[in-house]
Length: 151
View 1 (cartoon, rainbow, N blue to C red):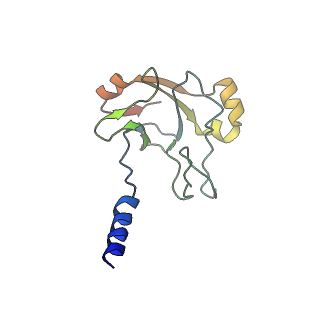
View 2 (cartoon, rainbow, N blue to C red):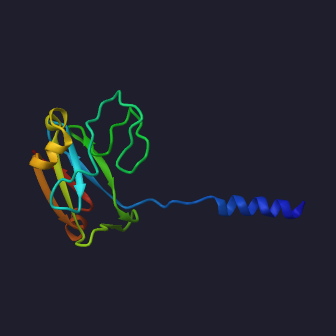
View 3 (cartoon, one colour):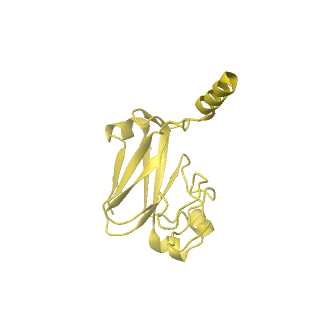
């Protein structure tokens, strides 16, 4: 009986996987319009991962991390006017880290009209964004891992 109890306690203690919080950064949308943010280590918008126009009535969609997206909550990459969103990075909450070779993130801001009226392939091929920002880890650290978008 004692052995069974020890086995159950061991399974409970060692069977639970702790996933520590990831580092991240926040983008504030200080404009009067909805923006979609494409984050990449490349110098251009790529076909994959693909941003999808958010529709409240979407079902069975997944976010950029492959997790099921609740249709009530918009994806992280859609930021409403005068709102913000938090994006994941490597590292920890206290010490975020950009995992690309050059320690730089490129942010492409795409307006909602383009997301609504253009196919993703066209957005990529014609690079239809309203603003591109290139931030190194050092620049992000000086900004306290916060970036404010202004139109």
